[in-house]
Length: 463
Image 1 (spheres, one colour):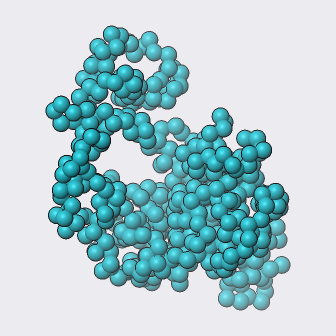
Image 2 (cartoon, one colour):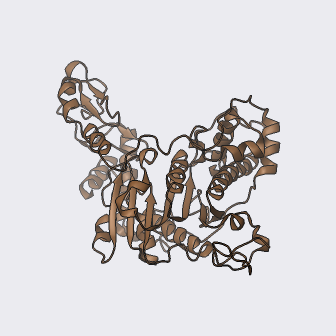
């Protein structure tokens, strides 16, 4: 990195600035006197900016000329002698040297000449074969959503917006203030999710034989935050992709904690057949499950007979699909809309993540020019917030119908994450699930629900 920075400076005929002369940090754009970034991170960001300038001038400095917009840097692979691009990104390769997407998994590419041999050894194919033999595998067991699909006609835009205003709130979620560092930001989000879940359901993780199920776990940071607050007896990670630097190794070293990672798609995982969860009280947690993945996770979790509660931070509502959405009955009851109307609501939800200059942020869908053309940016953000609230309300209704009553709350501010809403629900009897929050007291079922002299299974009735 230091050699690259020196090469960039020599090419630009501009000596490297002395550190104490810089007024603005290249990493976080903060005033130098207030910046807390490590020196090495500040140097990396400054070098990346100079490399970007060189790339615009056609200078590659011994690396591939392909620019990766998502990572905001050029490809780091060296090209073959006499070429500008590496073999992965070279657009001029043809014939047997041409690369093509793998037919089994298009996320990686192979040489055309190696196609036949690669199909026999492709790791994705081997993974699929291993998954098919797992005891918890049941193809499509959590797909299909909940409620009637229907085929009603699409309603007009104004009519749909009027029903949306009556059905959902446009409240902006406000919570704890975040941090700007990416690594610290994710850890802070996980900690705040656990804090908010415990505030809304204090007994969620209590008990002698509790298992935490991290749905769509990724590296397992959320389950790690749960263990830091209160160690359960077991942790199960459910994730379809292979991840490096997972929290599994750290948690496996803890005493009296059983850890299992289930590598499979949420649509195909039958949690009732996961050995670690048998005979244990289960609590589901999830952080930023995109779109339909949240619906698949909720469908998977309610199938557990020992499900105590769930805490799910939702994300990317524009990726929700009518075929897998669990709140179809609620959506129809509130709006009278069809599948086409649901698709519009899902697409409009991305306006909630619109940034100040009118463009969409990282958690939003691409802007559709035909959507809400006559509305200002602030009005679109309000509509987007209502759309997200409506979709989450349908999920809470689905949980309530399965005996898990709860609410939606912001766990952080929009600066820390624009997707800052958390769904928390816990097991309650049917009267408790239907009780209005304004008329509840304490009970054996939940600390915030009423108690009666004529106790039933849990001792709760509606006042």
